[in-house]
Image 1 (cartoon, rainbow, N blue to C red):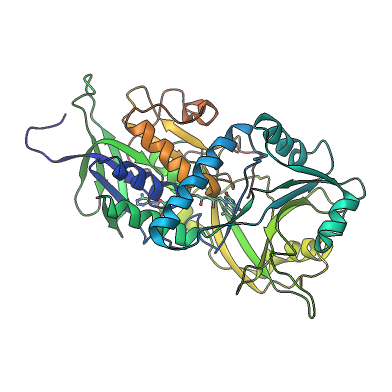
Image 2 (image 1 turned 90 degrees about the vertical axis):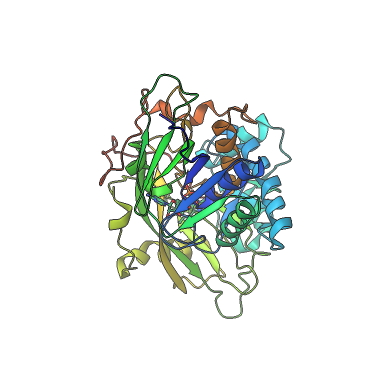
Length: 412
Ligand SMILES: Cc1cc2nc3c(=O)[nH]c(=O)nc-3n(C[C@H](O)[C@H](O)[C@H](O)COP(=O)(O)OP(=O)(O)OC[C@H]3O[C@@H](n4cnc5c(N)ncnc54)[C@H](O)[C@@H]3O)c2cc1C
């Protein structure tokens, strides 16, 4: 219960990664008293949001309901660009390649049809002619060109959102770990508050947004599994051109395999990036225990996939680092309140495809935290699909195990 005279802020945002930094900005922009907390500094390499680039797509093969979220995110990325003076989203166009009937193609077309997107469908010969760097194709492959696709700069985007939150009045606390979140057990939610337990002094708030990325399960009990991923960058073979003009944003099946890869050619001053799709199983549960070293075994398969799929790329990785994805059992995000009181809102469950949406996921979390109508239907993201009764309590050392097995993910 809120005590007379105690300081209770409007909203605490736990986690200032891709989603939380934007939530803090969008809440502070509404004039609320906001505290944003992260255990690391904005743009750090310990969660799910580092690695110099993330793909942006509007024809979202993971769910047609994501298209309006990507479009709203684009507006917000542009606002952050204006605020920071930095280019955060580079629109290059992008191509999704696979056999008709596969998730890459049918999912992309479903989103395009539902939202009347200006995509273009190409057969294998047309892809080879337009994008000769991607010419190692199966004859039955088709490509869907999404002219609105591009590349985001993740670290700069997060720093820009935290700066915008601060400029709008948010108080930002970094280098502090949230130990637990406790909700007052009272009937009258108008006077109830939430206690955010910290190493150096608790904070009381009317509402809390938990955007803890790979650590979400530890604070909420939701089945969000962290998964170690190795990111790989590649240079051009001698005399070849691996720039983004020749290798635009892509998701494509690999000829002769059932696997997919995703990535893009080199941005100025950088390398091309290629990653494998991963469909599970997901059997890690502690983000802090994830092996941060890159081992020789980590690179064997991606080398073969790059060799099979590109003429211009040297398949020996030129740069490597580890990162953490956060997977839900159905490969879809979790955005919504954890119970009917609405005092705790979660936003995360990236499943490998949320960076492009992050600015708008932060906006949605902000809307939910102030009881505004979300700008689009997000019923399919409701976290209560996993925990119908809500599950927020004290921080746990280890998350409960999810059901396991394969899930559908995006990885881009
Ligand atoms: C290799 C890889 C490639 C990807 N490619 C794409 C792509 O091309 N396109 C795309 O759209 N998406 C992509 N994604 C997904 C996207 O990058 C992530 O979904 C997104 O960045 C996750 O953002 P987040 O805010 O949920 O988590 P994070 O950015 O990890 O933020 C969580 C934050 O919470 C903080 N935190 C956690 N617990 C606590 C605590 N107890 N106390 C204080 N702070 C805490 C952490 O320190 C962290 O800063 C990819 C992901 C990976 C790993």
